[in-house]
Amino acid sequence: MISKEKESLILKKYIFGNSIKKIYKETGISDTAIKRVLLENNIIIRKPVADLNINSNAFSELNEQASYWLGMIATDGSVSRRRKIQNKYYESYSIELGLEYSDLEHIEKFKEFLKSNKKIYYSTKFKPIKANGTTTMAKLIIYNKKLTEDCIGYGITPRKTYTLEIKNDYLLNSKDFWRGVIDGDGSIWFDKNPKGNRKICPRIELASASYSFILQFKKYCEIKINKLNNKITKNARSNNWKYKISGSKCIELIKILYQNSVVYLKRKKTLSENIMSGEYLSNDRKQK
Image 1 (tube, rainbow, N blue to C red):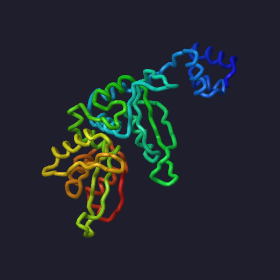
Image 2: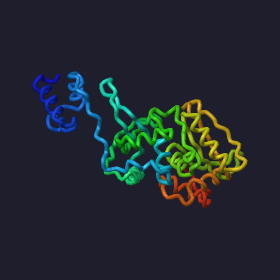
Image 3: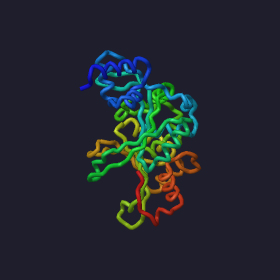
Image 4: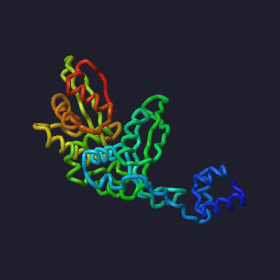
């Protein structure tokens, strides 16, 4: 319980322009408690200050870099036009990209692309698939209305998990966009040939809870690769839709997506090069 004296101090400091973070540092009162005091006294919480040191037009012109990072945001990122505090919503335009700590270098590349000096955040996420497993996530959160609205205009909308559908023809036909998508939510691996012999078979797969998005990827692949008759399937356990390509067709798609590319997730690029060169015949691993 916060005393009347401390409550008055919080209100005075905030009204005079101090941020919640600064008040916390000066008083030791948690940010949650500070927000509660503000809301109980009908003080509108200021939205985060837009990041000024940034290229707000990074997604205005669709080139290799912009298309690739839009693919990453479409899969491993998110966009938002508001945020919820104490059951109340406030206008707040932001984009976020989060990857496992092992891919920190990739988050730094995204930060460089945006010309941002924003701090990268770290958090621990529980992974129920592995017993008692946890992983550290690296996140970059950017508050910028122009970047957010550009993403939304391309079809990368808030709460997109089940509704993701790209609305831009350039992106739908861009190998750079789909490479970003595969680097985000795709898998590349090789295993034994389905016929049961010892021949190793490379595979590439995209999974998504949005059927419309998987269908868009399927159409792109069918345009680029002749006589491709693969079907979309549904994983009964995860409820995700999946589209998988194997063998020579897989190698063909990997060449389209990764050959001579400038921006990519390093570990998937390395595996792709192994597949294109035939080195995968003496290896056995999968990259997600």
